[in-house]
Image 1: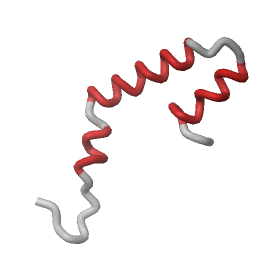
Image 2: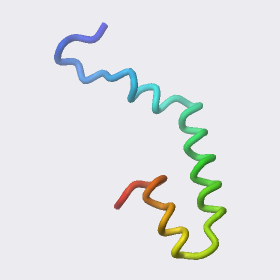
Image 3: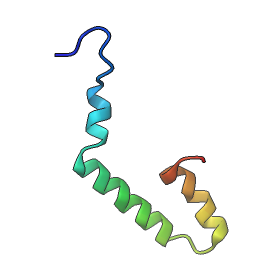
Image 4: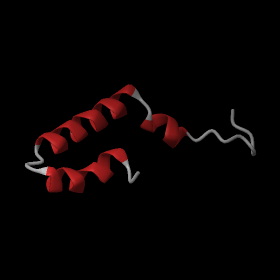
Length: 52
């Protein structure tokens, strides 16, 4: 059971489930494969890898 000061968040844990990770990898793979040039690749990159 989580306490008042416990940082446990079940939504974050669910985001790291095997199914969620597989879905994220599949979506990124499809988006990157569909990028026809570097401009398109740069456009889809932040959605899947974040803005670094």
